[in-house]
Image 1 (cartoon, rainbow, N blue to C red):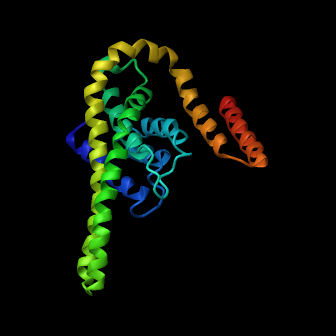
Image 2 (spheres, helix red, strand yellow):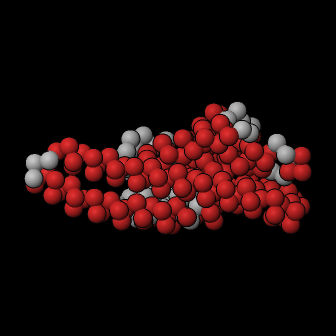
Image 3 (cartoon, rainbow, N blue to C red):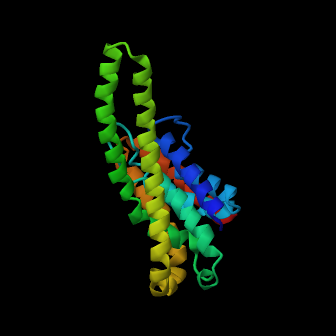
Length: 230
């Protein structure tokens, strides 16, 4: 990978980060979309699809709605995909399931997204008062600048979170890989199964209607059966 690839990942991180709450709202921020898109642009859509499938269900029950600030699953998906593509090309990482290992490393680093998101919202709270004063004084251009600056705060939060995940992961993976290379490689099949099962359990915990539980269970069971058959 070259610096251009890291910049492409950063651009996707910013656009998808804005899509979470600040702008667009096209659902590009969902891991199942952001990760394969990142992988496709970097030349390995398969790695992105694997990361997106692992991450999507985990935080589907914790959406960034209202004042809720869950861990940044968008940047975890994008950052883990970038790391997976980079480390998969290294000889001493060839035996490891790169998407799985990089996702496991990126997940705790994604907690940094909560801190930067809170900081962006804090600064935007100050901008709100400035924009209200500008509107009261009839200064529409200043109010518009405050609005754009608020979007910029969210873009900066997404970018810094991406840097923490990719930078931190690049430092941690060479150190940790020798220790969990064998255990992760041996248990990779079960770990890949654990991700959707945990996500499903989280979703079932948020469903209160018995009929919905039945329909969801039937759909999930049918999907697993179909995957097993093919």
